[in-house]
Length: 187
Image (cartoon, rainbow, N blue to C red; front, side):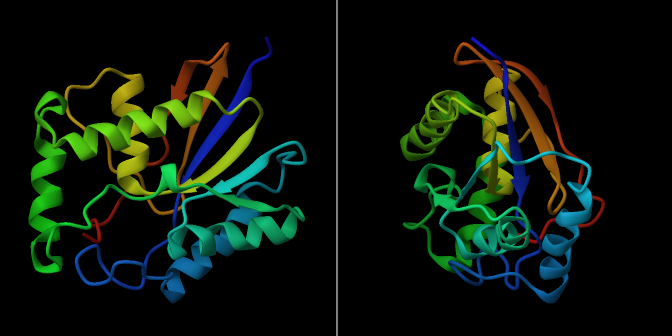
């Protein structure tokens, strides 16, 4: 079977933090970052790539300029949505997330373990080149799984950074993590 490429792109800067709004769109800076993806991929041939996104507005808005540039449909998949935290009160989300990020994977809440497993299963069932617009913790969940890290947090992907996976026979054979964030995380 042929090798295919999966590109995980973190959304641009959101207009609100994790604990402030359940589904913020992009800030003005985030919109600029999304538009800059056109230049980032200008030398790439994305004609055969599927475009997939988390259902969250900041991911969909990040995908929009590239989607238009390449005249692509955007397939929304819930599996690439942010870490499940609907049962956490908004004022406690930041502390909860910090705790989850530092916790060993085998002690994570069952919903978080299931979320990570669903992400990996969905990724491994994509059978062609694809760009997936997603989130900080989704990308970390993938990196932690592929690299067998004992914690969910592996690195701090910058806004619109690209983590590359090479897949062969439903196995990830290589991972190249995206750029680390140079500024504070907007938790």
